[in-house]
Image 1 (tube, helix red, strand yellow):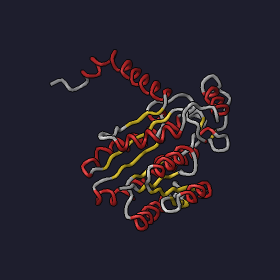
Image 2 (cartoon, helix red, strand yellow):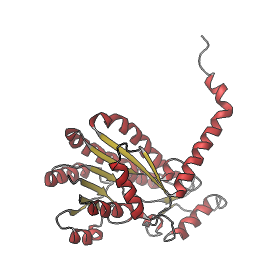
Image 3 (tube, helix red, strand yellow):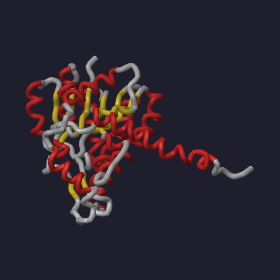
Length: 277
């Protein structure tokens, strides 16, 4: 039986690629986007199975209405893909409260509202999948990405607990952690950039320059990534985390080694911090 997908940020990047892959598999896709005109060609190509709905993920009050509308029109939601997002560059000192809050609204509070809205329907069906589009920056971070990674770390922490909470209802959670893929994430018209104080050039400066020049040259193919996401969801055992791309796999594994390296020299002393009985 075909699945019903609700995908945010579906007009471009990974959202668009996953929508195309799902439609290619014969599924029904409801693409949510602020600019639905970016989905007009998909709706025209698949008039019986593709639908575009206007939705700003940061409008958490609208999440229940969007989900309810999809269920009313299609009977259920089998897969929710929380994909809408953008990058942000700036040292922690340079990033203001309004910038940080807007990023958390987009990457944390918006997805959380959609998860809350969709779970009652998935629990009733005792099946479903929630795909959280994170980043390799949800496992590790570096200079210039404190705000971006902060939101992705939060999303991953919530999603790890969510997976434990909903498994008894037959609901799976998949956290996707892409590296550098050729999407609009690094597009200078979309990337958030904090004012440069001029004191972090040796660290954050390199990240700023990378973001300024990387757009259109990333090695990752979103179509191949989307195919792997569908394969992971169809697998007998869906992984909780799925790093995507050679760079992401290397970075995540290296980070795990670094964490182990930090802990090992202190392990004996840290284990001995309990009260003496």
